Amino acid sequence: MAPIEKPCRGRPRTFDAEAGVDLALRAFARRGYDDVSVSDLCDALAIKPPSLYAAYGSKRALFDRAVARYGAASGQVYEEAISGASDLADLRRRVLLAALDLYLRDGGVGCLVLGTLGSTGDSALRDDLGAIVAARRAAMMARAMELGADADTARAEVSAISVAMMGLSAAARSGMDDQTLRTAALRLI
Image 1 (tube, one colour):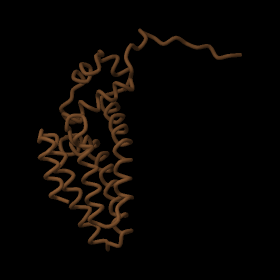
Image 2 (cartoon, one colour; image 1 turned 135 degrees about the vertical axis):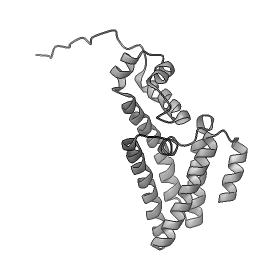
Image 3 (cartoon, helix red, strand yellow; image 1 turned 180 degrees about the vertical axis):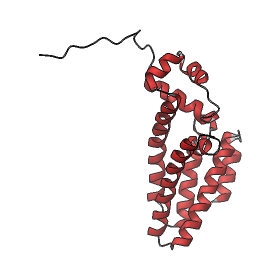
């Protein structure tokens, strides 16, 4: 016997929840987690708060989905940059150019993870985002050591790359024009 399908309560959804994640991602990337209210998200998605909560559960759950989507796209870009490096200078060049390309997408909003990590007052969120950054640093560290760097040299190089990434992200988010940012990034390389 086939199971009986129960109708959903309320009106059927008239918006695309997956497209909503993309819209929320843009809002969070531009302004950070703390500066985007539920009201802002509802305006961006053209829905009412009950619909937002029904579709995503909470603002934090929607942010987590946005971070996962951002991470899936950026993770592949960084993995290719890291794995393709032939030496430490090439690692720095590849990672910083990959970061720059990501940060300038969608009107130059910088990095969703780094931008939020530096601005949120939510300690649990900071811990979660810090873990993402730590994993990326660990991947760069492992590759630097595969390329022959000792632990101290690898750590110093990864720290320099990380600081440059934070600066590039902040500059992109603050509205620095693409050409100036690209010129600055090339000088770092």
